[in-house]
Amino acid sequence: MMPERAVAAEGKNALSVRAGIIESVWRPGSLVDVEDARDAMLAVERISGGTRMPMLSEMTDVEITAAARYEFARTTGVLAIAVLGSNAVDRVIAAAMSRHTHYPHAFFTSRSAALIWLTDVANLEPRGQ
Image (cartoon, rainbow, N blue to C red):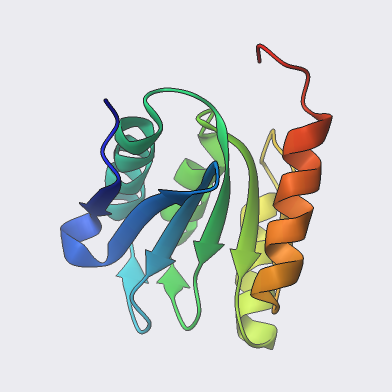
């Protein structure tokens, strides 16, 4: 049985699954380094049971090192990621993260718009993937 909640990156990241979407919330003001990124991706694997799922990643006012951005981009454990932020800096960080991803990746300032997009992406995915 998959856990309903997980904590990663020394408490900087809290994860849960709701309606088939992984919700990842980073503590505002956090600095995310490569070890934090690796730990967060391991937590995604644990909480998803190894099944690729869409993810909503709330990263408002979070600083992410270049190495961590690269680590996030390498993941194969997600179906798509919607990054939820609140300002132009968050948007720039999300754009930098999307450069090397092999899955759909988009930035939103609206939680409801992000969830709609993730649901649409998940519905387009062939079953059994």
